[in-house]
Image (tube, rainbow, N blue to C red; front, side, top):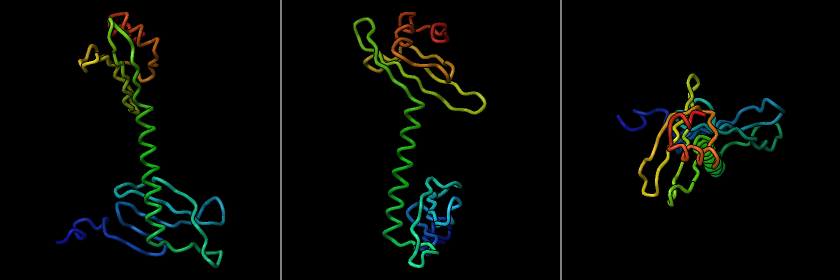
Length: 165
């Protein structure tokens, strides 16, 4: 059994409206919002497309332009960059870090939000310049990490009660 038989979803497809290769599937679809066409880029293993964008009309101004190698490669690059930016934005939303001064040294205070539909929470952590954890406490996912809240937590000896306020 060769690689393509073991993973049929990985087989390359090169049709005018459907291309699959390099971990992505491009599907030319009717644009629901107007008379034009769109292309949906879906990473392998995903059900929903990561990116949907407009697609060029063909010469007859009625049907879509067929996919080709150059267009597919450009679409893969664009979709991969879109996914990467989305992941960076998600990380920035779920992870905050502030540096404060404490006892003559620098202390890094981080807040890592753990999204969960039923019970979201966050982990508030203080580490010294050498990376040693000074304190760690679970807080509400709505906790706002600011310089003022980090300083107040440090002033209170990094107590769980002070972080919960």
